[in-house]
Image 1 (cartoon, rainbow, N blue to C red):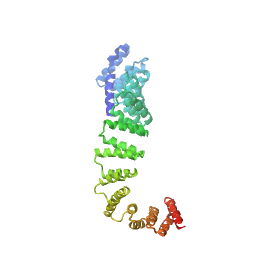
Image 2: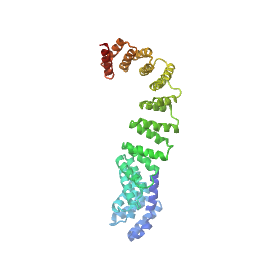
Image 3: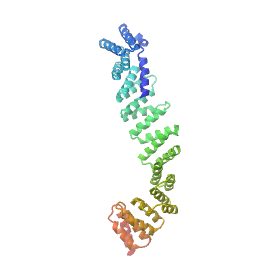
Image 4: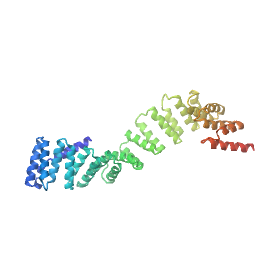
Length: 381
């Protein structure tokens, strides 16, 4: 916003310079505009506005400079909306004048008329010879501010399609425009392009990771986070989230490595760490971690403890844990299924049959239990 206002000020100073257009003016117009210019020079803006309005009301063929000067005087008088109307009317009457169009765009932006500002900026860019891509960037910015993300996307595509060297500010805007349009492919491509020039920008590594997460591209998200956490020290929560992401992509040792970098972790995280080691076949390490934790906790923690013991072939110990888990309604059926497996491994067929029979009607584990019962029936026969 500050940048836009600076541009407006510079443009208004230029537009107030009537003598540069003196050869285009009739004698009455030259007299009125010169008088208005003197009022502006003396900071008598309201008088200048009134004089110019009276002149335009009575003039049949007012010059473009009159509208430029009226818009400038109105702006300097503190009436930006009136300035916008003056510039816009002048642009309507003189559509090939790039300065009237550009001042209309800037005034509209300052009035938060973002849709109009975007159109004026686009038109001003096309009128400038040679074509000014920076005005197309401002058009995209205006559309983005006004939440017209489709128009903003159209503008940035045109902006980035030319041979002009692409500025960092253009890439940043385009990234956020594509994100708003949920154009994930273009957004990720531009983020990578931006990061190739700014490899230490942590905000955009974090944004890239978030984008991959939203698409459930966990491997790419983890890669982006690894780079991010080499640039900035991650919190314990961030490391835990990275570990669980590695767990989702079946990379338990990477998950364990991330989780081990979380100092002073609570027992629940140590049980989770033991689970990652067990998934990687490091049962001895998993069991050592379990010995460091209390043999109580939430149902989910108990269930994880039981699974680790089961994988380590500690079936009796696992059964004791699964019996405790069976009391929890949320995990009772899963614990019952593992009780059946423990009994199966100990060749206690009756106990296995009873465990499977108790959960055969469960929606999640019932089919597995039914398969176990069918096999046991076949073995009996």
